[in-house]
Image (tube, rainbow, N blue to C red):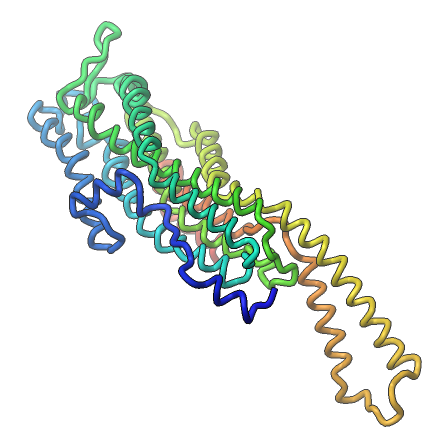
Length: 401
């Protein structure tokens, strides 16, 4: 490829890319003057969501005498799970829109400016971007999510909430039948559906990202085996995937809230949730980094090709070096001291070692650890139920120091 001629043409009007700024919900935000990617606008969206989902539950529970006290076993103010869901997880999911938008928007430009996409594959890449944006803007997809929320959420999730096994601010079971309170009806018909829709919408966005990566993996990428990121130039994708960390924090908060309710009101212990915690971490980390695995075959092929071609080059240089300096091929007046041949041989060896260390994965252990810790972070305060604060801080100090 002639970089001096083709690259400027490729960089003219590169396709825009955002997983966030599109879709019916985003259009609704815009009509309500809550659209945009400024922090102030995002904070207004968070406030609007809290006022619509949490505040009515507070007022209705107060009206029915279930805000606090002994009228029910689980009053509203002590329902940790619901407060975590609507006051922590929901705002984080909305804030994640800004983070993901800012971190992922330059992805398309980087594919182009780095030379991973050549002029010959530009049309395929543009088609992949266009397909991702079309799916992001799909009305039918979000309608389907909404139907899923009200069919499964209201008919399955709400009875499961009421079936907690104790009288609560949102209702109780009498003779096997669910008896919601006013707040319980609002929770089941408004608060939970809104939260579940936004959460499922994020899963849908992860699907769009995974589909985009799969389509990119089918393009003949211009991978560089000697790239210092040891991932052929794709190492930036592991860093970009960290943008989804807030989504994992929100998901971890949901589990932490559920565990807290069961521990404080049903006598459960933290150790009883070890499989749920481990399973959640594994699933969420794989949901973010797993789609990158579709690029592994291309990376492995690039490494094999690079090792073969660069090995041949290194072998030819070593032969010429041997002939020149060890077999009398150098000119009589040419001095070994000061010659750049030895440094060139060393540089050649360093480049070859970089290629040997090339990974078949565009992410590293640090990316995995950071996402796993993001998922576990909301459950950290629950460790205080099994060990004193001093012991916990001492253990953290040993890990960090």
